[in-house]
Each structure stands twice: as structure tokens, then as C-alpha cells.
Amino acid sequence: MNEMVIINVDIVSTDCTITSGSVRIQEGKIAEVSTGTLKSSGTVVDGKGRKMMPGFIDVHIHGAAGHDVMDATPEALHGMSVQLPGEGTTSFLATTMTQSRENITNAIKNAGSFMESLVSGEGAEMLGIHLEGPFISEKKAGAQHPDHIIKPSVELFQEWQQESRGHIKLVTVAPETEGASAFIEEVSRTGVVCSLGHSDARFDQVTEAVERGARHVTHLYNQMSGLHHREPGLVGAAFMNDHLLVEMIVDHIHVHPDAVKLAYQNIGSGRSILITDAMRAKCLPPGTYDLGGQDVFVENNEARLSDGTLAGSILTLEEAAKKMKQDAGLSWQELVSITSWNAAVQLGVENRKGGIEQGKDADLVLVDEQGNVTLTMCRGTISYNAEEGL
Image 1 (cartoon, rainbow, N blue to C red):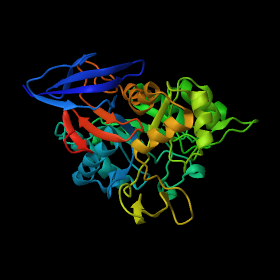
Image 2 (cartoon, rainbow, N blue to C red):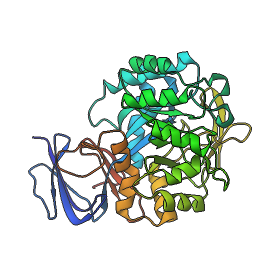
Image 3 (cartoon, rainbow, N blue to C red):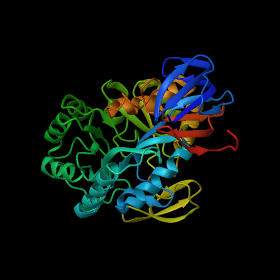
Image 4 (tube, rainbow, N blue to C red):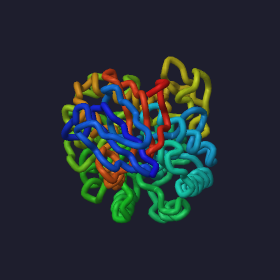
């Protein structure tokens, strides 16, 4: 039997931490979690007293290491998959952009095929597709190409879902646009999560969208109606509506550290999800890159269009987690919620992701006291190891 034991780790869950514990891994699954030191006839890894967390889940990422979901090739998705464990990410949603119908179709078909050909443990697992656009507001397009924005269409979504082999799990929509209410109700009914974003919606329009089934907010603060004392907008609704899980890009570029703290004080660990919204320039040097058919200029850790509009990020979830912990004073248990557990619940995979429990996938991350990732395991395979001899 293929077995590994990781000893001498502080095992962090959403509600407790096991000090100096051990985890037994068999055939890619967690077979046993112990408060003591387990023995094994297989491989034994000394965790050196580090924190063991469930693998990070990024529900909003466009690309990394020169690859992009819209490249519509298996090589692009594979390149992302093998790169992400270096930042502690063990699963992700391949996120599309607002492009032509043909380009979106190609990207979705490719992603659906890729999901069904995954090799266990080879890299971060693709859990599905996040369709970001084209059903958004022209007023809040951001780096989404305005020429390809269209009103929400249930028929087109159904066509794309069929092309994806049923793997679209999350779709961003502006709730104030024509047809959005019926779209949100019908798509939510199928089990797909509707996310509110790239939107100029009023507070009451967001409230109606939630009543119709919306359960998610795309990158809080960015490209949405802000909080105003006479019109709370989408930001205010995200703060107040307990049905909404809320993404945030914590790179101190998209959101000011004090705005991060303000959001967390209102939303808390139970509804927050850290994302990267990263594009292909992540892990690459400064320069000019493509995002959704537009040139993006990367300099000083910022990715912007020629007019200065932010165009995704080059953020890693490792850095986002460290900044979030510092900004909001999070405990390790709270960090598990916002890097893994909440996303797993939102995507309906909490039976195998988001925790360190018997029977779940051995998606594990070891971090030091500063939050630096030292080892990442994807479904029982060590996919990243920062240190020789660990």
C-alpha cells in the first residue's frame, strides 16, 4: 500500500489545532489524524513543528507562469496546475474572460476536457470553471473587453454548460442588467453558484438577486457600486447579507489594508474567501503580457491596461494569506476558513476538500510561523518542497 506519514506538525482546522500531531496518508487520502506520533512502514516526513493547513483553493484565477485559461489549450491548464502548489494552492477554478463567444466556447470546451483527463497528484486539481463575464455591466467592465459584454442569457449559458461537460461551477453576473433576475434564478436552480460582480447595482437590486439565489460576490470593492451613506450599493450589501460569500484580492494594490480590515470586521471568517485573480504574468518578470486580448503592463507588482486600469494581479495565495493575517489579525483557524474551507463549501466539495480529516483528499500545506509555504501535497503526492531533506 502506498503510504506516507507526516509527523511533528500543528494540524490546523477551522475550530481547533492539534499540537505536535501526525497524519497518515494512503492512496491519496487522509487515512488517520493523530494527536501523537504515528509509525509507518512507508515514507515518514518530519514537519519540523510547522503548521499543517488544508490546501488552498483559488476560485478566481485566470493564469500563471505564462499560461492563461483563454489560451484554450491543455498545455495552458497543465502549466497553471503544476505552478500553483508552489504557493500552497491545491485546487482552483479555471476563470474565463469576456471575449468573443467563439473564444469563450473554445476555452470552456478545453477546460471541460482537461478536467476529465486529470492525473491524480500531478498538480493542483481543477475543480471546475468560473465564467467571469460576458454577463456584466459596461459601466464596471474593468479589464473585461467592453466590445464583448452581452446581457445575461440562460440559453447561451446552457449551451456553454453543455460544451463544458457540466463543469461550470461559478458565474459572475451584474444583477441590474436586463434579464439578470431570471438568469440568476434559473442558473442557481441548476446548482451553479451565481456571483455578483462587475456591477453598478443598487442595494435593493442586490437584495433581489440574493432572493433569487445569488450566493457570491466577485472581488469585493473592485469594479462594483461602492458604499455610500444614501446608497449602500453592492459593497454595502456584501457587508450586510449573510447569504453572500465574498471574494477579496488582498495584495494591497486592489484594496487598501484598512479597507481589508473594514471588510473583515463586517464579513468575518465565515463569509470571506481569498482569491488571486491572477493573470499569466504571475511568477514572471515585469513586461507586457496579454489578458483577454488586451495588453497588460506589469511593473512594481502591478498589472494594468494602458489607461491605468488594474488588470488582474500577479498575487499568490501565499502572499494574500500572509497579508490578510497581518491586516485583520487572523488566527490560524480563521485563515483556514478563508483560504480553503469556505471555498470548498461554496463549491460543494467539502466532503473531500477544505479540511484535514479521515477520508478527505490529502491536499495539505505546511507553512512556517511567518506563513511561508514549505511543502504542498496534492492528493497524496508532494507537488512542492521548498527544502532539501524535508
